Length: 111
Ligand code: 5GP
Ligand code: ZN
Image (cartoon, rainbow, N blue to C red; front, side):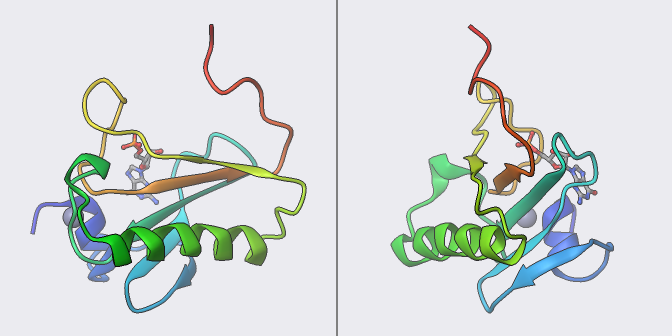
């Protein structure tokens, strides 16, 4: 299995787990861009938002991100990011939501 996040889901590679259920795993990003930076990934391989066609799984991902925010007490706010494909700057080809917070974040994108 060559997909990095599939290997993490399978337990072949370690991660710092934050939360999981049957469908979704959430773990700390290895190169955090903010005090809190967690990746929320489906346990089954989906390449990106572009390929996502499973409504139930889409809901699971969003609810998992909300659960992560509550577990990590991000009541002051946070940001969800889904970099998608080449122009979106996606580096890992396994769908993931970034949950970023723990400080006042700047503008969404540089202008
Ligand atoms: P992307 O650019 O695809 O949206 O984000 C991929 C994210 O995965 C990056 O923020 C990067 O730091 C993170 N990442 C890459 N390799 C690993 C890893 O082996 N473990 C963890 N926990 N995060 C990783
Ligand atoms: Zn995968």
